[in-house]
Length: 230
Image 1 (tube, rainbow, N blue to C red):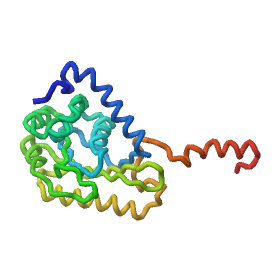
Image 2 (spheres, rainbow, N blue to C red; image 1 turned 135 degrees about the vertical axis):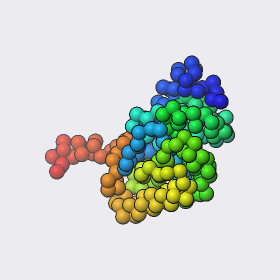
Image 3 (cartoon, one colour; image 1 turned 180 degrees about the horizontal axis):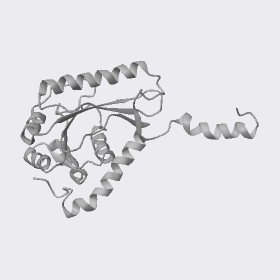
Image 4 (cartoon, rainbow, N blue to C red; image 1 turned 45 degrees about the horizontal axis):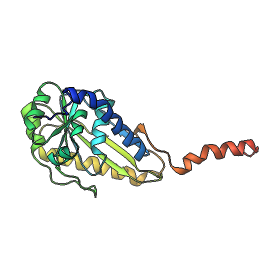
């Protein structure tokens, strides 16, 4: 069962706002921006997301906050042992599938990385059946979401999140959909100027400016004072 930092515990309720501020600060300090296309459906649902960067858990939290969804993210026992305070932000051990099922049955959302591990090169690994088991048992759809974090035309990387359409609990269909969504992100990246957002994507979080952006405004002001501005 959930530990001492569970979001419903006395300690968890005290710690939760601080953990959420740390997650937000981590995103804003390390990324240039986070872009999104699509939206979450009303819970309950199982959010299934590829896992290729450190920030993927942050993105799940951000999506839940953005759309006002009460949800949990399944994390490995190893990660929760290292960072038990993440329970205060909704994290739940992958060994507690029954608790995840209970939360789905009470109308919440549960997010899971169906690959079961981080794959840094961005390829989609083998999917585990836990995501289908949860959706089948709870009688809820699976919502596919993919992410890419790229260092493009700015000093800090940018994140792009793409939400697909709800799916039935079928592992083969989920895999094909995640692959197609990732291929679409890769296609857009190859066709888009390195300093432009992808077509149809909206900025949902502005992060750290690049060096050139930080000096641009003072430089323009200096030119205007000299009468050299456009």
